[in-house]
Each structure stands twice: as C-alpha cells, then as structure tokens.
Image (cartoon, rainbow, N blue to C red; front, side):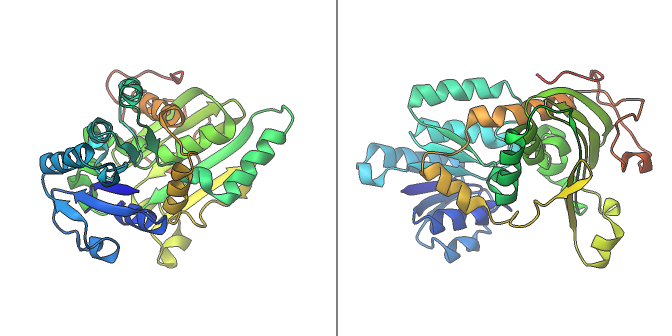
Amino acid sequence: MKFGLIGAAGYIAPKHLKAIHDTGNQLVAAVDPHDCVGRLDGFFPQARFFTEIERFDRYLEKCRRGEEENRIKYVSICSPNYLHDAHVRLALRVKADAICEKPLVISPWNLDALEDLESEHGCRVHSVLQLRLLPSLLELRKELQEQVARERADVCLTYITRRGRWYDASWKGAREKSGGVALNIGIHFFDLLHWLFGEAEQSKVHLHGSRKMAGCLEFERAKVRWFLSTDADDLPDQVVEDGGFAHRSMTYDGQEIEFSGGFTDLHTRVYEEILAGRGTGIREARPSIEIAHSINNSETELSLVDAHPLVSGVSAISTPVGGQRASKVA
C-alpha cells in the first residue's frame, strides 16, 4: 500500500513512519511546514517531501488521477489537533483512508460531517486509540465483561507527564488549538475508561487549569477520580529520584492496574488492525471526545467530594466561562 503523511516533523511522526515500514508498506509523500525531517531517511529516503500543504494536496490528486498502482491508499495525520479535521477531509477528497492521531477532532459536532464525507467518498476515517490494544487491558476488559452486575467500582486514574516552558509557547499550550489538557493528553485515557466501564453518565470538574485538570466521572460500572498534569512539580518524589519524567497509575478498587508496559510501542499494532479491517473509527472515537468537550465546558465544583487525592494539594482552581456543574455527558 502507498501512504502519504501529514506532519512529518512532529513528535509522533516517527511512530507512524515505523508502523508504515514494519507493516510492509511504502511512504511516497510527506508534508510539514518545518523541514527538519531527516528522520525520513531512516525509513523512506525516496519519499517526496513538501513544505506546503497545497503542493502535497496537488501531488496526491495527481496520483489519484493516474494509474491505480500509483494511488495513495492511506494518509497518516500527525499534525496539530486543530488541523486534524481539515486534513482528514483532504485525505477523503483524494479517495484515501485517513489514519488520524488523537483527538480526531476538537469539537464533537465535526464528527457528523466526517461521517457524511466517509459515505460520500467511500473511504474510512481511522482513529489511533492504541491503549485498547495493550494485552493487560484486553484481559481486564474481558474479566469485566464476564462479571455479574455489581456496584460501581472505585477507580483512581493519575497521569502526570513533564512538559517544559516550550509547551506553553507552542500550539499545545493554546486551548483553542490543542483542546487543552483534557483533549491533548487525556483523550486516550477517557477513551480507555469508556471502553472498560461503559457509558459516561455524569461529570464533575474539581480543577481546571492550563497545566492540570481533575474531576470525577461516573460510568455505568465505575466511579473514576482522575487527575491529569503536565507540571513536573506533581511528579512523585520516587519518579524524580529515578530520573523519570512521567507517572501513570490506575487503581481498580485499590488494586493497581498495569498499563505502562508497551505504552510507547503500539502504533504498529494499530496499523495491523487497520490494514486487517479491524481499526477503530469515528463511532469509537466519539464518546471520549464528547467526554472531554463536556469537561472543557463545565464549571469547577466548589465541593471536593469525590475529588482525586492530589486535588487537595492544588491551590489554584479556575473556572471556564459559561460552564455548568455536574454536567451530564452528551
């Protein structure tokens, strides 16, 4: 299969390049406004490279109108979050399936238009939700589905990943471009929680800042206290002493769930699933995007009942304009 790739200079692009290579496919064209893309040499030194999206678009359209063997079948999208929607549309327009990094879109209503475009162009949109492929979590989901009805489990999710001062100056630090902490670093975890514990029924937000967020989500089968942060000061002392820069933890009724192992090496498995016709698409991506959107547009709770243990140690709690308390998730 022939691939195109948007966002070749970005952080996540090497994982997609490796996945395309490891599944025996070929990258023929890549684009990025930044030209620091020597990484292409390690996988596809013969790939065409563009710094203007218009020229990339024109090249893909030329391939579409040419011989069938030269058509681009997939476009991998590794661009900033706020551009995902436009770049998925570009892929569909040249009759290619889109493989898009998270979040698929920032605003959930944009998913409706993408579904219409899938039908119109006869191509699919695939969302990268790699945590669903971790063996330990697949086993946990199987166990949960086999359980008889019971009270909601008590789940505590913590994800802290260090980000330097550059983060605030980049598109990732601008909520209108990244979707904020909830969408930029939380989307995989919200998808995981929905996948494991069923539909989200209620959401409370206890902390809403540019660097950290926290709240409580009630799913069909679990009450989840969650905490997300890009502030290095929130890292546990032991992680810092060991020279680490990230901490992931999820407990289920007090028992730690292992989901750190293999976290950084799942993109090839995602591609294998997509190429086998089993990839996750718009329908699977929608619930987590709706959860994050609801969180981003909720007021912070004055009461810290059901708050994550780390929230009590945080002094600054901000509230977005026009939010609502204890909101139902759309």
